[in-house]
Amino acid sequence: MAKFYECLNASLREFIQRQHIFFVATAPRSGRINISPKGADTFRIIDDRHAAYLDITGSGNETAAHLLDDGRLTIMFCSVDPEPLILRLYGHGRALHPGDEGWLELSGCFAALPGVRQIMLLQIESAQTSCGYGVPRYHYEGERDTYLRWAEKKGADGLAVYQAEKNRVSIDGLPTGLDAVTRAGDGDADSPAHS
Image 1 (cartoon, rainbow, N blue to C red):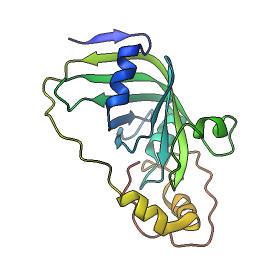
Image 2: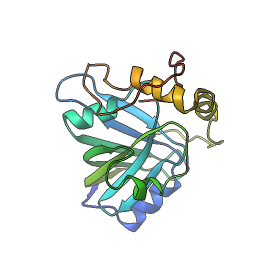
Image 3: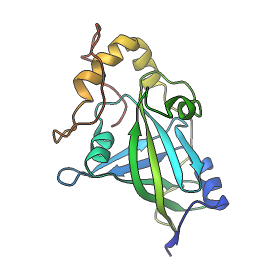
């Protein structure tokens, strides 16, 4: 049975910290709804009403565009361990970019990864748990290294070109707020990461 919370309590925080994957859902006022899986230890709880995740370069930038257009953000954690549980965090979000006020302080909470685009901030308005009985059990085997190899091969210049070409507007033509600077390099290869 679903249960609502006004903020993150100790039990919810502990559940989040045990998860290896989470899902981000956004929608513009008009256009496609986006759901993206995330991992690589990129989620952080700031306090009982705020959370953030490190956003790396991907084939699209839908979340950033939707947050600029509408602001609504839902993050879902779903246990695949023996103890079933689904946790959704509902609220509004915004993107924080390198150079923005607060970037240095918040970016220090994450491991250094190549191709970082922005940090997505969530102001939590409510949290909801549900049973998760219908979710199958899986075994975590580790993180993929495909993205890291791709980003390292691209290098800083190649990633900047890629972001400028593929991450400035959403698939519906909405601006993402990403002010990527095009520099010399190759921006043609497809990224294995998600938007």
